[in-house]
Length: 503
Image (cartoon, rainbow, N blue to C red; front, side, top):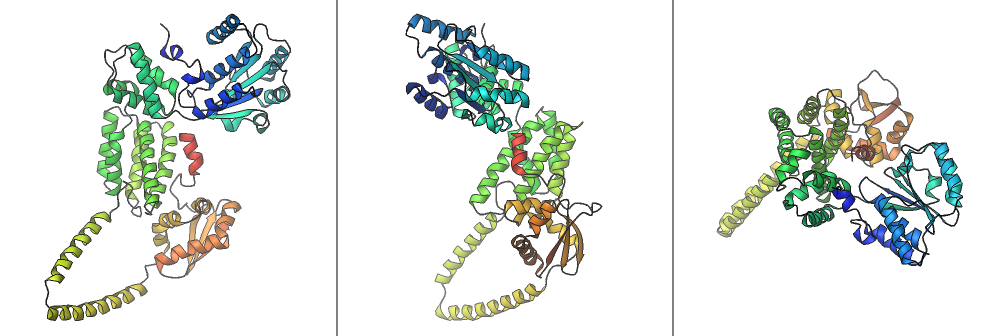
């Protein structure tokens, strides 16, 4: 019995799911006879790069053939993978310069049965530098009958010289709804009984890979009815139900609840790495929500960066659960962090204040003129007393010490803008305080210069002035490796690079 993926592999552009922009462009180019001689398909695994390459190969190899019988034979040969004029090469195992030279020599021979020779080179980023150089000239000036379709999951590893000689198409992850609809179609055709939520869980798990989704359905098709439980047992739960308890425990600074929740996940067979991925997705949503509502985001940024670092550390840790516990407990002990669960601690206070205001207005309506006069006099006296208290409080600045600075340093980093200055500030180490001069040491002159820039340093000094109620100055230096870093482990991380590595 053929696997579902091979059985339902797209055989025409109409069958391709989730890549409308790519398909539309190629279809129009084919109709107008404006197809290039070299294409570069880039995207994550299972998004349809090789399938679209084969569909394009059918068009290229039959476009000038009038005989319908021969056309059908060529198309059947492409689908079965046994037509001599289509060469599919795996660059992962044929990556050397000799392999490319052999390919170039074969190009000199005209097509045998089709009107064109098509070379599909999969995982092309695996080619060596010398092999890429050998391929350059042929890509730029191939024979009229030769076409190249290069496919890669790592577009950034393709030399710019190769990219410039190809038409580049980027395949995006297939949306979850498109995957669910395709899986439901296959299930209906194969008479597979499956719950809709089970299909949705599969779609969420594969993260945009259609091939992986169909393979998972194929794995489960022998069951009489595929349920959510069946999918979870074979894929492992993603720990979504544990995200809220963990975030609430962090907000409540409840270390025991963190330990109990992690233990519960381990006992229930939850993949801790899958849980961290789910946690990251939730924190990203909370971050976007906080930005849209104009809320403080320093705590979420700190949590995101540290969690990304924890994912990488856990992969090589002898006890992954201990690594996760240590990271979560570090969040609990950070007293300067704000809330991270996506709700503001000020909301209950706002509601209570609104209730009091409503009660006050009702009382005002029932008072006599004499009572109003007494209230006005009392309010004026209270206002004067309040102003006096504020004046007294304003001159009582917080204690300024090295420990006090360390206590608020994460807040200072969180409020620093722009992002480039913030990342450089994380590289700094607080090494001294002399009256009103704060000394920071950096590992490189690059980060030092970023923070020392007049606009950047003034912005940081203003943040410190707001906290400590006095004028402070930054002094930046390079070196002094003996002092300990202010940022927790993993803070000097570029969020974009880290996220690219995880996702």
